[in-house]
Length: 203
Ligand SMILES: Nc1nc2c(ncn2[C@@H]2O[C@H](COP(=O)(O)OP(=O)(O)OP(=O)(O)O)[C@@H](O)[C@H]2O)c(=O)[nH]1
Ligand SMILES: [Mg+2]
Image 1 (tube, rainbow, N blue to C red):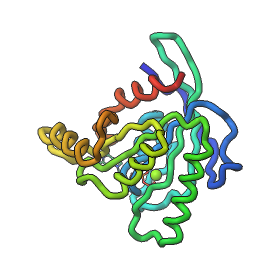
Image 2: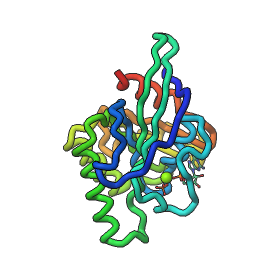
Image 3: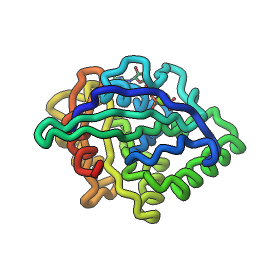
């Protein structure tokens, strides 16, 4: 299993010219504001406070780049990958102008970031399929960007409901073969499947 050994915040950027130049395989986290992107990055890296979390949605307006050193014990390999924390979408109090800026920034990222290996799209497991999430998934399919969906905050669901909720979500989001992973950053569950997803894509 892939395991994260060390993680560093590299920089924040808006324009491609300012992205870090390193060409390691990159994985970007997207999802509605407050869905739990930063919390998940902190848990995956076991680095509390690496990505800034907050109770106030819509705080992050930049692309945040992280450098990660990983190890795969079985094959005795080591290497680097990168995480990018994309600003959340769908925050109600954000102006039209800011929404447009978000769209431009993310489109540039998809177009110019050659080393982008896959997107991890986070959706809130408590809410039925959201229009913004469906749009994001459509963009990824159109652009043929590899991706998975991560259902967050499953600790807020009754245990007996998790499986059924995942089935409903997969259907409503029209996931087909796209993997869907239930997680809880609070209970620290569902991480193995994400490490596996990364491992299959780092080489
Ligand atoms: N119960 C529960 N709360 C969570 C979980 N993950 C995150 N949260 C909480 O949800 C809130 C938002 O988490 P963040 O990780 O900052 O969310 P984000 O997607 O990075 O938000 P933006 O950066 O604003 O787009 C925080 O109060 C977290 O503590 C989870 O698995 N379970
Ligand atoms: Mg965040």
